[in-house]
Image (cartoon, rainbow, N blue to C red):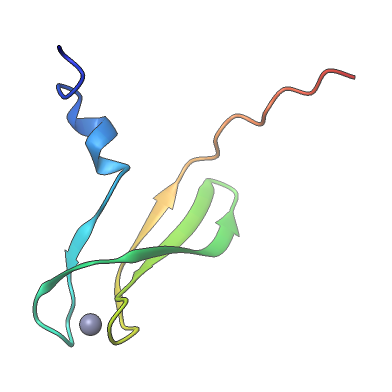
Length: 68
Ligand SMILES: [Zn+2]
């Protein structure tokens, strides 16, 4: 079994970030903040206190193909 050998895939699952308010690592929620030309900007929000723990910009995923 070699299904757990891709660390970049694991990153997509749960992200723990240090919350500046709670001062612990929390399982943050990802929320879409802005849509930029270079990608979508997300912020990571603490589920406990609602503080922003960080932001990230993700490139657009290729749109799903439509068969017309
Ligand atoms: Zn917090």
